[in-house]
Amino acid sequence: MSCRKSRPPSVAEKSLSLEEQQAKINDVRRMLGTKADKIPALCSDTAIIRYLKARNWNTKKATKMLDESLKWRLKYKPENIRWEDIAQEAETGKIYRADYHDKFGRVVLILRPGFQNTKSTELQIKYLVYCMENAIMHLNPEKDQMVWLIDFQGWTMSSISMKVTRETANVLQNHYPERLGLAILYNPPKVFESFWVLVKPFLEPKTYKKVRFAYSDDIQSQKIMEALFDMDKLESVFGGKNTAGFNYEAYAKRMREDDAKKSDIMNSGSSLPIIQSSVASQSHESELLASEQQSDSLGSDPCSEASDECELSSVDETASKVESIDSKTPVPTLTCDDVPNIEAAEPKEVH
Image (cartoon, rainbow, N blue to C red; front, top):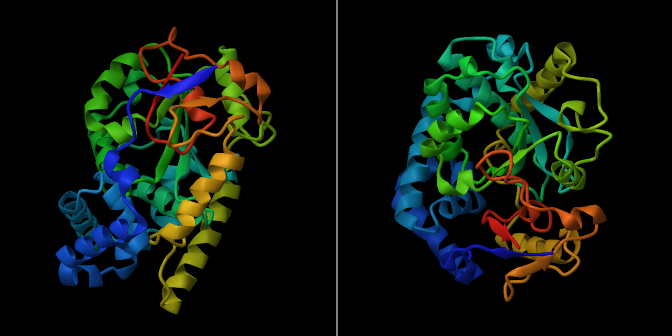
């Protein structure tokens, strides 16, 4: 089976040389002026790259977006949030960082919206921000994106708060651009379709394209989960073998330890890794992408820029027969897009 991109990648992004990218970074920094000195780490080359990518390399739009993030961070001070500030929000494990990575080395955040335990929008967003900052602090050097696994246990329409949904979309898309690599919504109930229709307008196309749906009763979904995760570590609710579940006390201990490390970094005067991009340089990123096409890619014939076709393969040979799972809901499902080139934001059609 082969997969073909439904549309070509952004012409601007594909055609920009490292020199051209650097010129755009310099343009953004110039337009920001002295504002860039307020939080230097957020205005590093690799941080600016994320904002440029989020705005398709449009320097004016990227500058505006980054300027808003600077204002937000200076006012909200997310780096100062500590476990004691949000401990009550965490009691049910509605959001937590998994103690494992996916097979591509990305941090995994578990979200369980059916386990909502408070009504304060302010505190719920504060806890989300705390979790994002903590997850970013643990990104691997070569991976500046994360995976979200969304568990729909106990979820009903009564779990919904449109106010929280809008603010969540605003914070994640505008202040944490290009941090989401893939979001897997696992076993959403049929009624979720109605909510999805309401949520989509709040999501930017680049974010929406990274959302995939998976089902425990669909064998093809499970094959792709096996291709993405170590099943011994993956929670049983997602089809894995780990039955331990969320342990609040153990998680609280981990977070307090992380808070102590964060405070040590801040007190030393060093830049927080929660702000800086974990990619060392653009040249390193180019080398990484090239190597991924030949080794990390699960395709037997790596996808190349010259061709829109790729073959599924090797981490799990059975995944070579994965088809689109369109019978469940009219939303994006796990497809070959998620296995051979997991980093790609553009969706692909299965033929």
